[in-house]
Image (tube, rainbow, N blue to C red; front, top):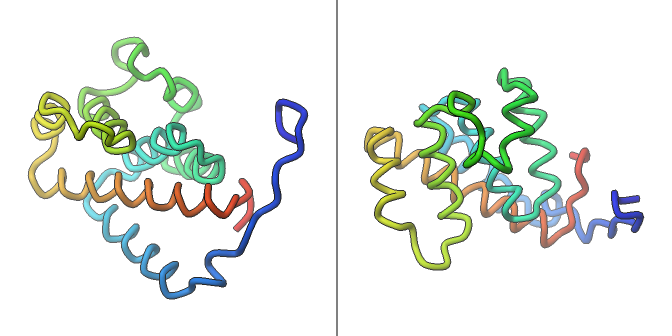
Length: 155
């Protein structure tokens, strides 16, 4: 049962089993995208993107991974409203990363120059490229898992 009393739809297919070469390539891309970035920051970006994309599977997985990376419950709970979170809850670097992640997830008008500039101020060129890579990788994972109805808490 879901929180609104309805039964969750069953998964449609096992993507890892039915598209193993693509799945392995995605795993490799995900690992390459994370290189050189703070694991806790990566988890925040992946959770926020998954919230926007409605991917319960990824949100569940990355919330658990965030806790393992040292994230506090407060920061995880406030993530949907990070814009309004009190000063000091998220660093300026994290806020810049979250703003960029939101624009990449929405991509309907491109990434506005001020958002990109804010991220570029906080991250060196190589790090910014990695951050953008994390953003497009989690968006791809979200789309795979939403399309196949991957169930939270499953492998």
